[in-house]
Length: 201
Image (cartoon, rainbow, N blue to C red; front, side, top):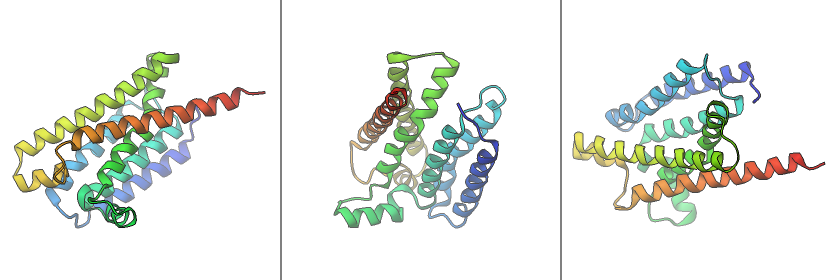
């Protein structure tokens, strides 16, 4: 896997800059702090393990894009993000679907780093690599939904509603997880197709 230290420093700089910008006057400060726990944990984990396992620059770029989407959602809350309102107007949707976009992006973007980790650290290949990559995405998606539900029960009802962002949909968690799975499947299919093209004479 190719690595580009200069590009990785640029990605880290971008993430730090975006975090600083989105830290200014978020819609709900307490919700912003809760949402940013994901970013803190992810960045600390990546930095702490880099000497033992360094992802490719592509993987770091995909992680950066996902965390950027998350930081924007945390600033406004997912249910009040302007991009979601714009999409709502464009497509005539009944709700702000920015949260669904980010869940889809989780599968779409994070499955490649997961695949890379399983391939290099666990030395998986073939169908097992595909299956476990999808399984890890689904597991983390379900875990995040569970953490959201627990957090909502431990905090005020108003903040819990903002944090969960279900917007009245009782099947919000299931739909979010399904979108993450679909995003991951799409990326793996495209990855496989690109691999076949490279193998052609």
